[in-house]
Length: 357
Image (cartoon, rainbow, N blue to C red; front, side, top):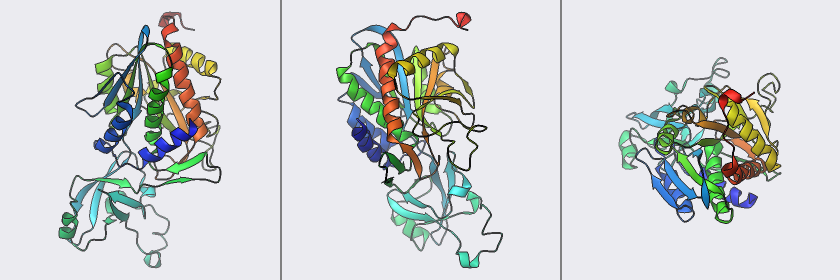
């Protein structure tokens, strides 16, 4: 299972797919899941909705992972070939200077002033992205145009995948959230031999990084009884974060059951069910709050009459950078918890909010 996930993650993270332009990722995912799902469709927004029917009646469950990654988009091209851009998603300006990027498969670099000519102030300051440019090796705007590159084209981090001496630790761009996509694909594979009651909707959403948009559209269409957003979360186990005061979350300790995000509070009914499932799975997991961002659960839970939702997130270091790091064992634990939820979902007892402690 771990090696299957490793292969999937390596494949999916190499694909370019910023928010709003996830087509290549969608095509790759479809190639994997069409033989595994009872029904499979792509809605007008770009979400993939794969349906797997259980053998007996039961609830409708939506498990979602987003296909998009942060990046940038071409704003304009100067006469001498330098490319100006706008950011897509939450990339910090400090992580841009000198980075390798890909534009429609062509190699480029976010230009950096030679250190020999930097003033003492320039050596330490963070330059805003609006002052940066991309060098794609062209001498004029006509040369750029000849490559088929122009305004509106997506800019991604240059794709690569690496492993540490401990090869369970992996490093790549777009682990957020191609890891979740890999887990959903593997879940559908495993469900071929796993009986369950109800209907599972494996949803690969779009435009999460720019406002959780795809998940809202998909949830409105599906109207599930329960929903789980499978995503990633920053780890608080590096020297630059106060683990206890800021974020008590670590890699190698299993996924995080995220009780709160920037605009999401887990419903006590869903909290009870998720804790029950996590304990029954016998897998390591963490429970904490992360208010520095959101997952698709934040939009799903507000749809229609309100949907019982959870966020099950995998810790990764150096989030929203081209060198995100996570442990494959945390991915395996997440998959086992998801399988446990599917196995148990047909036996969930109706619970009343008013009766919860």
